[in-house]
Image (cartoon, rainbow, N blue to C red):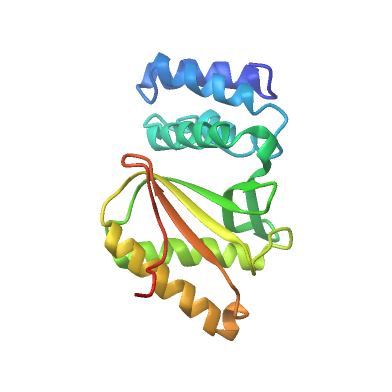
Length: 202
């Protein structure tokens, strides 16, 4: 790898391979995607950091960090480094992280990386609201007129997700708490290639 922290990555790769957190194909794909994203701000403090830290403390390891990091660099690579302004956009209160956004495109859109999505309406609403709150409160992220795109390996209930998107977009547009913002929410189901958006009026 040509990116920063390549030495740490190689050490972590051996550790994660030994612990079963990743196989050789995972490691090769991660390295390829990360190389393609060389120079993207936040790459090393985001998915590379997750991969390196997975299992670094304790014996159990955290295979979820490895898989999540792999998904994030793959999706960022698909978007293209030329289209990414920053990865791992953190909203901080002093030393505390209040929220984090995975990918910010050069056009300002936010892309969130998920494994599975859309299994429970309360959880879907909570995930949307946490990311949208971070977008609203982050000084370097536009809120009004912006788009939040969630990319998931699998989306369970498309109809429920569509309903939640519609309800939340309307709530934000009508609420002073959300500055009556015009927000677009999209969910991309990679398994089917479907992009789920708000319900349209008949």
